Length: 403
Image 1 (cartoon, one colour):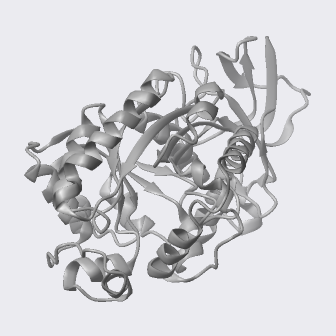
Image 2 (cartoon, rainbow, N blue to C red):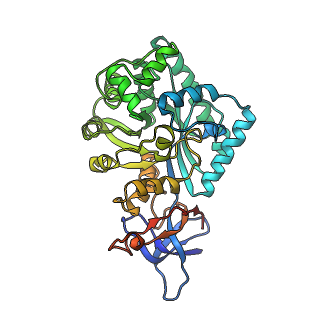
Image 3 (cartoon, rainbow, N blue to C red):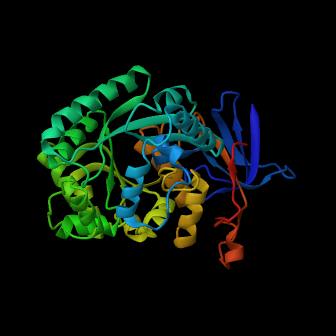
């Protein structure tokens, strides 16, 4: 048995932490009990929380770290990724993604929803202690390519499954796929019960879908790439309509993760709840700032009641894959959100999306979520809050590690 004690312990069975409390685990890491410390017991100055769940990552792009210019907008980012993709050897790519996964593990990430376009990451993920669900992302703007693309992704799925990975097809976005492929890949992915979709990532995407204009539209025309249909609606509404066009009936079953949603409105959220039985939202704030200096509408998301998750995106659009830095960014921009709620997004809701809430996400007896210690987590008295002992906040120096 091991016992760890800290000033704050977030079990996440509620939003408030236990103060000056302990967590006991057995030798396998299973939670035995939590509770208040004995008088005089030494506690670490920080917070113990469950292991993080990275709800959106492209770990196979880790070889692109440090190569991208920031603030180019989506059109500029897409130009860069097309130019820089496959500029490293397979050995270099695998070494970089393994380093990235090891780094996430050391920083307390115990599970990940990972996007893959190929099999580069399969062997590393299959042997790694971190749990991953692999979303095999497909592209294809020409309608005639739909059958060929689906055959290829089914073969990739078979390889992933043969290596012990949970994996299934998933659509990329409304603008990189023909309408037929959006529907086909969504239906195929939902056979597994899970889907992840890049949605409303930028104003440029919305401009393209609503009016057939803007930098992303012009970029595709200039490069001779087929353009998506101009629907006059948001890209989210277009995606939801494509699910129904594929023969699915509302409410569509399965865990569907809408990633980014920087342009989400209350009307769009209501429609998502009507069409999807179990929608989730994944925010990747540092990636959004990196690409187009924009943050997701957290107040709209909270008001919608759709569970929020947190992701890091990739090292092509982020400097580090660190969940604490993502949470600190959100906390600085939206100080009204208590730390307990942010941690619920980063731990429990991610586990729920992956269907792993029975073992991950909270510090409850019988579960094995992993323990993470966050240093430099202090009471909000420094922020002039009257709830100083109930509202701890991260600081710019916060670090996470396994206790």
